[in-house]
Length: 377
Image 1: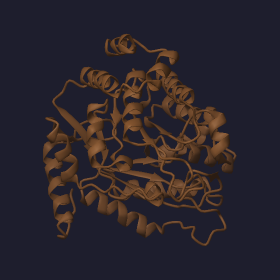
Image 2 (image 1 turned 45 degrees about the horizontal axis):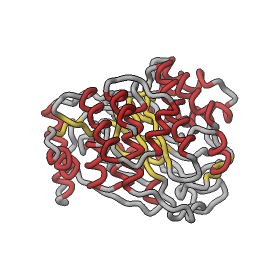
Image 3 (image 1 turned 60 degrees about the horizontal axis):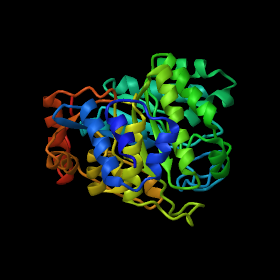
């Protein structure tokens, strides 16, 4: 029944929203997966699959928004709220560089106190001390919050942050880009048009970033496709997204803990459909952080061409009770077992030199065996 649609997508023709919905309603996982793999092979005929090394630094968990799906945030008056001391944050960056990382994924809550100059100083200090690190920082909800809190335009906020050292924007906070869904699961947080407009402004400044989807909560299948359609439309307009990552909602320890978690079947199907639908996205990342090693590996046969990040540190998903920790060797082995060569890349999907890649492998092996690290330069 879906064979013609899959053939159409494999041939590089664009699927309509109705056709995307037909695919996501289907349970023919093998056929959908094979088609997604064929698209991935067409877009990436090279004999390697990629990964990167970064660290997710959550500089604060204080947040004025109330997200029922989030186990990480704390309200402004919570005794469990924190802001990382600058010296602690810089030490985390130093450790990342020592492990061969070239990127910091830095996100936090919507803190009600700190003005834009605080974030400019933070970026500037990191960039000055670690000029090789890309600062993949501040999701669209944070940028939108900065603009409101400082009574500034998005253009001015992003221009100032870019001058201070902002390198790229993470796609966090998208969840499902449908206002009905957002209104049901969050309060005090950016809505769909504004999330997209932060990315639009950034892309129009020449910036790049990632796009995400968190599914498996209150959204309908139609709304999943609407989310993909809105991402695809913006990518048509700006071309600024480097990659797309989707994952299943992790309900434990959240105010939505009664939601039945989605399993590997639904995750692989949604990722494969995303690969087929997002014909203008070059890269799809596996989400082993939420799915574990084996499903994360299998995702490379269901449309993904990238294993994502080593994630030296991760806190948000971990607060929801999902803790999948992989070593760099495990990530590289997962790629090799599928017949591909593992290669380290940067945020723009450029391969790092093989010399630096091997130094990173050795540094991580030392760490994993408990040996002292030597700074990589």
